[in-house]
Amino acid sequence: MKRKNIISAILFLLLAALTFRVILKGNDMGKVAAAVQEMNKGYLAAAAAVALFFVAAEGMMIWYLLRVLQEPASWYRCIRYSFVGFFYSGITPSATGGQPMQLYYMQKDGHKVSHSTVVLMTVALIYKFVLVVMGIGILLFYHEPLSQYIGKYMYLYYLGLFLNIILVAILLFVMISPKCFKGIVTGGEKWLKKIRILKHSKERTKKLTEMADQYHEAVLFFGKNKGKIGVVIAGTVLQRCSVFFLTYLIYRGMGLHGQSMLTVMIVQASVYIAVDMLPLPGAQGITELMYKTAFAQIFPGAYLTASMCVTRGLNFYFLLIVSAVTAVWCHVRSGKIKTCKN
Image 1 (cartoon, rainbow, N blue to C red):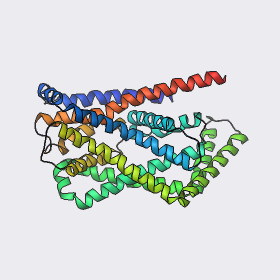
Image 2 (image 1 turned 180 degrees about the horizontal axis):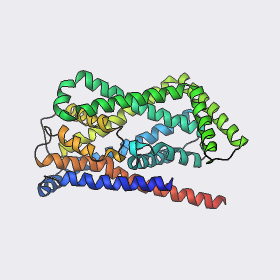
Image 3 (image 1 turned 135 degrees about the vertical axis):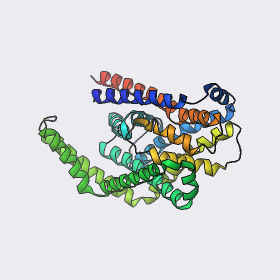
């Protein structure tokens, strides 16, 4: 695990270096810096607050679903899980590291693995489902303007939307099929025993089977409480739109006018949909390249690179730093708890 994390960190740093090179290439950084400095500080503070809300909102939905399952949970801890997930998603390809680490810390805090798994899968499924619905809506009602804005990257939009649809279908199938989920759990254990990573243990097999049964019961419970899922869907729509709205705050903060809030948010959404499933840590490099193409008609001159630096800086790098601090704190706290128990 440590070796995998080191490789992910090295890849992340290499991509970050290439990204900064892309940003610097062909730009008058003096004018870019001046554009950033002239930005209205009120709008900048509001954009930073929206970025924090984007991550914290996921934590509140985790808290809400745990409470629905009658799991005692602190909203403060659930927000921590969200930031930990953001950090590990940001440094691993295709954001694969986030949920396993969230599950690890939730289990450390005493939450049932079955309930935690259902909650995290529900949050992920609804998150992707909302993105897919938005993507299809944009394609149906905004296709011509969209193709003008993102130009040569239109194929990435189709690919991103397709991959998200596939993922939603897989997550939905795994969630509603108890045999499938139990097969994945028990089959995974058998495979790990076969390659001698795990030793044979009847007790562990029994616990995994019980966990799979509890998981199915939790899924059935959510199926009977569709109103609760509706609340999470509404919260996810608000969360998703908040990060798109952040770009509009940057646009207004730079004193620019002429483009509607809806246009800026739709263009930003199209960038997210296109890069969301790409196997790059934090979708670095391609996000910046696509942003410069998509927003070339919205942010003139030096404002284009300046807006990209501020927007990307807030909705990814700023959040990554906050999340890294949170992840380190959780790791230290977990170590202290383990020492106290010993």
